[in-house]
Image 1 (cartoon, rainbow, N blue to C red):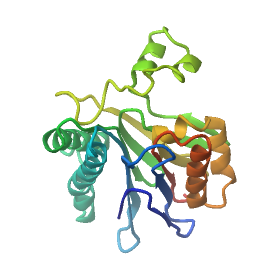
Image 2 (cartoon, rainbow, N blue to C red; image 1 turned 90 degrees about the horizontal axis):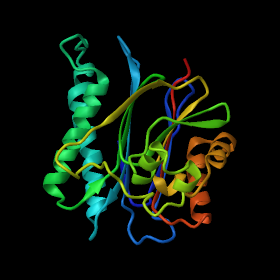
Image 3 (tube, rainbow, N blue to C red; image 1 turned 90 degrees about the vertical axis):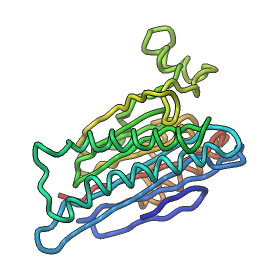
Image 4 (cartoon, rainbow, N blue to C red; image 1 turned 135 degrees about the vertical axis):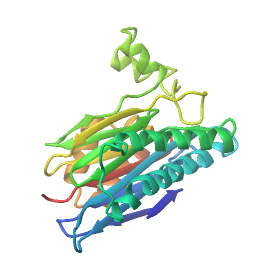
Length: 273
């Protein structure tokens, strides 16, 4: 397991039959603290009665003064991991079959995000964070999301955005009051109407997707997608020699574009089927 606050980097490389992961996080060129947190967990069991390759990937982009953002994002990521491991993966290791009496995986993720919401509200008053979580089993990805960090499918040389930004500017686009191009420069583009640790009730978006053969799953904070175009992100990922090199190159590109915010990218390639 890797819990990655700050600007540490690491890659898990493995044979083609196993999951591949790269990640990088960086403070950027302007901010003094890195309020992003990345958490990466993978597990493989190839013994008797083998289990599907398991991955849990969490990206949180904190907010709040006096370092409250980095505390909130780290706490939220750890809370999600604790809930998912205890409520899903540990029972799976013990051979407990998932039946109608057990919650669906997207419900497990929603409960994990709600637990993080309660923990942040209780322990970090005034703090908050985005939270984008992906639980993968083989090529299947279960995603829970709050805020304006993003999850993408990267396939056939292009990005497909899975998540929806919970920002005021994006809401104005939905209402037809702004174009997508205008929203990119709107003064409220970074103001969120939904975040973990904020308000008493939290609505969590969920998605279930299959990562296509040869495709990747990308989680990233707005410090990446707001600085680097989707076309360039896709090009960097598709031309890099490894997932880790791709993540490092994405951070470099965001910094070259100004690095106005903290930058985090997690890139996942599922096992070959």
